[in-house]
Length: 320
Image (cartoon, rainbow, N blue to C red; front, side, top):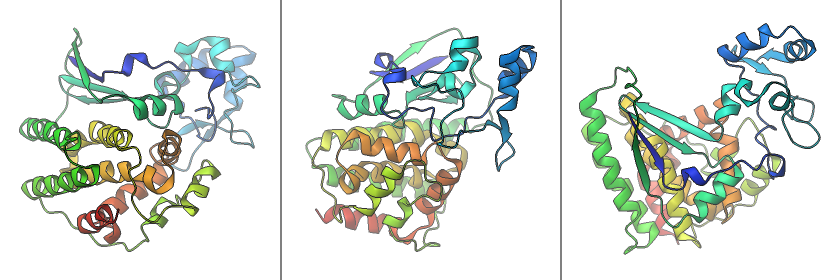
């Protein structure tokens, strides 16, 4: 199997209790099946303590019930994990063991990255000199799947072209993003019909998520700038590259490539509207990418909102 990662991936290290915005607060954590089986085998006080903290969310998933101030019940006063300390990292839930990493499997290729939702990862990506990738080969067998191989390889080739468009520093970033939208629109026409304009939610109201995790994000939305201003184009370029890497190839499942590219374009615009720093993109990511409610709504708006149409986004990119 080919393992693909960003070049800076191996430099990431969790700073645990020193984190300015712990991943152990704000989110409910799913207790995956394998972890639950292990917890049931613990016939001691800590096992009973774990059992007392399990709950069901609105989707029927088994989760750990947060404290009143939205902290994980295992997050102690030093911002360290009591479960990790008591039974070892290998027995914490899958989400905790892997965060902030994400994994996309495409048969014989596994793509791994880190998410902007982690403030340390966000700083790394924001400040990276380039968003290059490394491939390694291991002995793992390919992951069985039913994806269309012809479509997959078409998208792999297309993503390389998308990377070239975004990183063409001979052009200003706003023009590169306009070119990226044109490229995606043409590609979408090859893949199938794309219907927009079922929603008229105001552009900035789209960012007022129904599930609020950190009130600081809402303050940023309330005090947004009205025009795109790429004060730090390299960092915004990196942000667009993150979204292309993470989501572009997932169009192999739904043929909706245009929404994936819109996400990359809007991702690059987020700092100019809400704050020109890694912290802003981190807040957006934590609010949106890691909330099922918020992400489903955002994906709907990307495809259906008239204010997120290609023409509207291109107009915003020319108003600098």
